[in-house]
Image (cartoon, rainbow over all chains, first blue to last red; front, side, top):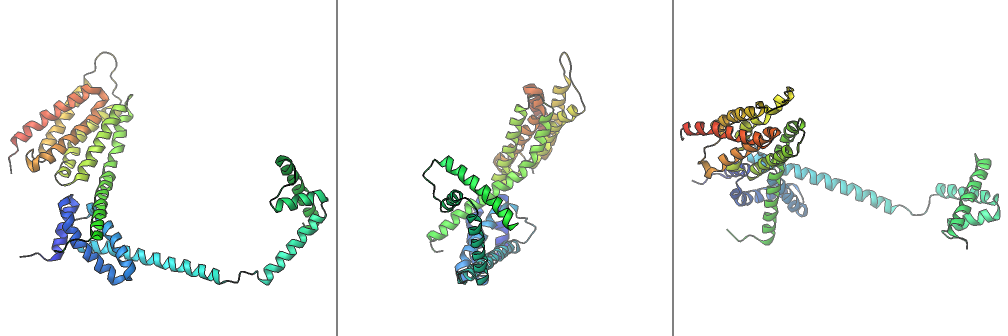
Length: 177
Length: 182
């Protein structure tokens, strides 16, 4: 008489735990539809096959650890259920991230009135501080801010920028701190 | 049954690879427990290279037998149990601060022979029968007991290993001879 599938699975998992490679093809024949049915029932169609594959690979990766005193069916479904939960969590996080980024995209790119006020006040303060510097220092910093350089050696220009920044800091400390 | 599709064959190939790598990881996780014992055996030795090589052989043999499974796996526990006696006896003696000074010290080779005999008795009693499953379980038990014993007795060089091997043979042979076939 043909044995019921559950004891077949138990027997095959025991053989796999022992290291019997000949049990691998029949175990695959039995496990793949079982895992597919289980994931199909709990996940959307597109995701179910990927998760079933992951679950099957994990089951076989851990087959050597299978304890023959435990139910093979419960063990297999337990590993698959864990993979389903992981996939659901992953999908949930993906959805959260995409919602957050679509919110970010839907935001008006123009600055808010408050941001615009702060920006213009800051520009005025910088202009005022630059105005207190010598014209050569202000010109050096303007070129530096634009990513350009005066027609002098790079090392000399770096030194001038350094000095101009020191003077700007000194002016800033006196007028705004 | 219908012919498997290309994707089913691909999944089957991946499944086989997953199974083999899982078995290897399982075997390594168990064999790695031997590393502290090998380190302990080599710690009192002035030239630990040979002991470490023996230890690497032991870890490799245990890993192979556990990965291969079935008949090969059945010899691992008896081999380790039998081999642990000649493996640990010299280390214990060394820890008890026995130092051979001047002339020829006969204590260590004698200890290797005695520990080998004790290990051999255990091997004869516990190891699967030589003709069982084509001899693979017996072979793996002997291999592992030999490697484990050599890790302990290499502290006395090749003489120690030779003495231990003779002891193992002397201990195991009579026990195997009197064990009744099932």
